[in-house]
Image (cartoon, rainbow, N blue to C red):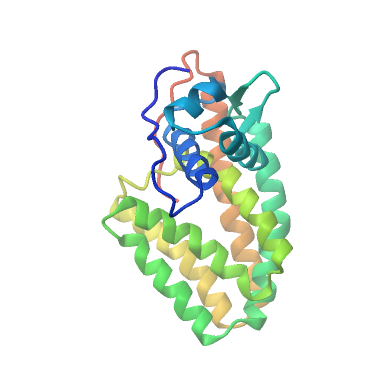
Length: 238
């Protein structure tokens, strides 16, 4: 592993395991740790001024999210991007999210709809990360009225695994007016169905949204897999 800008852990407000998890996860999402790259657990522990125990625990969390493979040789490998992996993630999302959203549409309140509308409004935020987080939260809040604790645990894992694919393809730093309108329209269509307590329309809108995103990402990853240099480029917005 080349030298990384991992920061040593000095505070105690957040657990060391949480801090390492966030730091390594962000390095993977930013591409600082590239798909397929192997890195040393011992070196990571030294860079973050920690013992191996919290570092390995953090890496086990990331392995559970499908981001790395942790070996017994004191190293880890960033899971390569692949169409098969992406299709596995989205296959499960398409099984779970449309059905939960349909049930949430029946159970949801006016407050639920207001929350979803506020999140859509944040898609236009000047800070790309705020816009990104609003999009992530929309999908969580959408299903919450109908979701069990196990539903949310499962979806959190799937959302975490999908994030690096989504960030690769959908560029929140370069949103055109037409893309902004398209993105809002997709989510407002979902919201309108929820407001109407129309489970059929909600299920259909969420399924269509996930299928469209999956198709875009499969196309992008397929081109990356066939490219001789494997360079990553930017796509459109989600």
